[in-house]
Length: 126
Image (cartoon, rainbow, N blue to C red):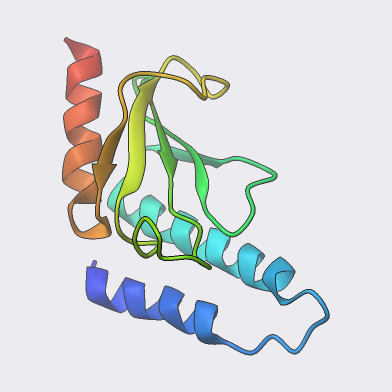
């Protein structure tokens, strides 16, 4: 998977003129789908469980085949206060798909997200 290509796809979604009264409604749905698609390619053996109700960001859980969970949350794509959507993605261990407080917070850019999530999975297996 080429990360730069994937980033350009999402950037195109965010730049698109949706010509709608509430453009972030459609943009949000497209962003969520595209980010989930990236995660599915990064973690083909895992189940990606996006949360419902996230707005202008993508968040949810990555569930490993051995039932370990990692919570993820991107930055709000409308603001760059904490970085772009692909920078400083919050990740942390979780007990299950309802554990929103989980372990210690870690940050990863999209380029090193796969490596960092796998590292957290390894910590959980110890």
